[in-house]
Image (cartoon, rainbow, N blue to C red):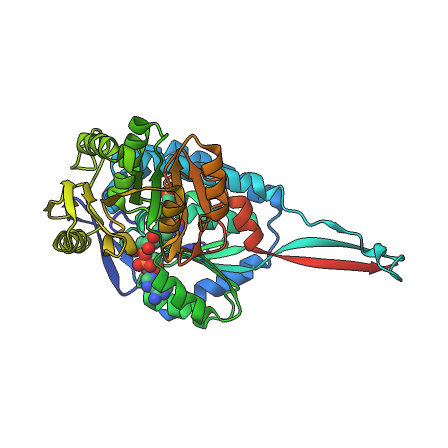
Amino acid sequence: MSKVVSTKEQGLFIGGQWKRTDEYTSVWNKYTQKQIAKTADATQQDVNLAVEEAKQASKRSFPAYQRFEVLTKAADLLRKNQEEIASLLVAEVGKPIKESRGEVARAAQTLEISGEEAKRIHGEGVPIEAAPGSQNRQAFTKRIPVGVVAAITPFNVPLNLVCHKVGPAIAAGNSVVLKPASATPLSAIRLTEILFEAGLPDGRLNLLTGSGSKIGAWLCENPDVNMFTFTGSPGVGQRLRERAGLRKVALELGNNSATVIHHDANIEEAAKLTAQKSFNNAGQVCISVQRVYVQEKIFDRFLEKMKEAAEELVVGDPAQETTDIGPMISETEAARIENWVQEAVKEGAEVVSGGERNGVIYKPTILTNVNDEMKVCREEAFGPIVAVAPYKTEEEVIDRVNDSEYGLQAGIFTNSLDFAMTAADKIEVGGLIINDTPGYRVDHMPYGGVKKSGSGKEGPKYAIEEMTEERLVVFNL
Ligand SMILES: NC(=O)c1ccc[n+]([C@@H]2O[C@H](COP(=O)([O-])OP(=O)(O)OC[C@H]3O[C@@H](n4cnc5c(N)ncnc54)[C@H](O)[C@@H]3O)[C@@H](O)[C@H]2O)c1
Ligand SMILES: O=C[C@H](O)CS(=O)(=O)O
């Protein structure tokens, strides 16, 4: 059966073959609200077939150098098809074209780095002979692929975050059963085609589309899944961990990222970067700036500069080259954000900029006169809103940043080495970014949070460690 799917009804990809189903779900252009494709709805039988194909493939030889060749060729194919794939992201996410091109470029880097790391997987010698009575023994460790990795991914960065799971899993010698977000599955489907065009052996990647709750449950029920790697909301992640039992689970979850603007910061630069990273992808980014704490001496000047920067952003059609901010993933989500802002205003917050919705578009919104108990400060907004508040002392602001159930990344703009190093010791996050926002990420860095932001690290080198087991081998000579 051809691996090239119809342009309108996309099937499942199992054991190297595209498979049609009885039921399909529509995928919509998030700006025009027009149907752009239909994707297959997997059944439990499909899930079990995909896991079996993955399990059998994981037993077949696929040496590290071949894994390197496949992943680096796939990276090249992503770059070669960048415009086509970026257009897919514009349609299925509503992500502005210039940002979508950036995601394709980063996805290629993620696969390329994964390929390079495939050649660096190693154990270590163990000086077992140093133990009394073991002078005649030798020992070392080996890194062994876990086998079948179930990967479940979110809607907002649907290509690169799939690459952050599929790339390391393949690099480590595993097989993958991938379930992309139901709202944005098309880029994952295209990536699947590209990986097999690059020579990935049948069964090494199996793509299931359909209901997350159903497929998630069926994957948890299947004992041949050796590991789960999930990126998404904390509630779903926690439920998955509960159902996975004793199997490995890597969780990349939510955040309500804080940024601190200290009195010695470069105000213009901080305001521009903070505005950009508060509103890119319509704020639908796990490390989107949501809380901004500004030292009271510079509060008014910073707020004025941030308002200016926010109001320079072009809001509208994501297919236009000039657009900076496109629609949210759905009108329901845009209405939710509208309600959050209205609730904050009723509690005393002031709208400095934005505060307006037009269907799926919610304008970049800056709130002040907020308190730390408001929903816009306490929970994850995952939308184009940011709360800005003054602070007096370094001790106070560190406590306020830490007063959160989340801990993915935080940012501090300061030229004080002392403050920066104190924060590095005291701020409870997986990543602290000095003189930039928490929205900073490059794809080879260790990335992952604490508290309700999850557990485990991504970035190919680190994900590979989690997707392998370290086995000790001892020789009694
Ligand atoms: N930490 C990170 O790296 C990171 C990156 C991107 C997004 N996120 C988080 O993801 C969330 C937004 O993405 P979303 O709305 O797609 O998240 P979501 O949790 O609604 O869905 C994520 C994935 O899980 C699937 N799913 C839904 N219910 C499930 C269930 N019961 N069992 C198994 N799978 C299920 C969905 O179909 C989707 O594929 C935000 O909380 C955001 O912070 C985190
Ligand atoms: O949404 C969260 C993503 O992990 C941020 S990034 O696109 O990987 O930088």
